[in-house]
Amino acid sequence: MFSKHVTKELSAYCHGEVTSERSRQIAEHLIGCNRCRIRFEEIKLGVKLAERLPQRSAPDSLWLDLQSRMARETNGNKLGATKSSPFTFKSWQPALAGALIALLLVAGFAALRLYSRESRPFWQVARLDGAPKIGSSRMEEKGRLAVGQWLETDGDSRAQIEVGSIGQVQIDPNTRVRLVE
Image 1 (tube, rainbow, N blue to C red):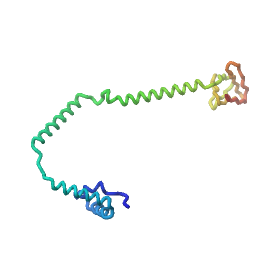
Image 2: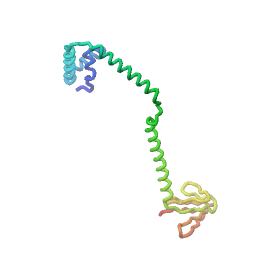
Image 3: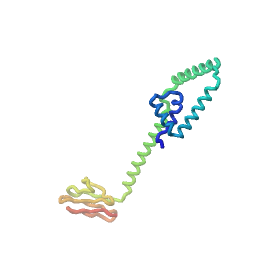
C-alpha cells in the first residue's frame, strides 16, 4: 500500500525531534500503515520502560578512569604519529604489488604478441622496382607476406617472393597475390 515506510524516523518522531510538517506526515502514515504503527507502539513501550528505570549517577572513579585512559590513548597516538612515517614499506605494499602485476601483464602481452607474430607462417618479399604494397602498407626493401595478406604491385612495381625452400617467384607489375595457406 505504501511505497515508503517511516520506520527509520519513528524514534525521532516519538521524542518530538522532527519538524511539525514531518510529524504530521508520519502521523498520517501511521493511520494507514499497520506495519509502521506496530513498530511505533513497540518504540513507545520501550521509551515508557526506560523512563521507569531509576537514574543513578556514575561514580567519580569511573570518570577519572575514563579521563586517564583517554589521555593515555591521545598521548600514545601522538607518540605513534611522530615515530612512524606515513611512507612506510607496509603502506606501499599494495601499490607495489599492483605495479608489479601491471608490469608482468604488459610484458606477457608483449611477449605473446611478438611470439604470435613470429610464429605465423610468412614468405619473405623483396622489392625489385617501384613501391609494392603488402596489405595497405608500402613496402621498403624487404617485407613479410603473412597468411591472409595481399601483395600488390602497380604499373611501375615488381617484387620477388621467397617461397620457403622451394625457390623464388617474381611478381610482375599490376599483379595481386594472396598467401592463402
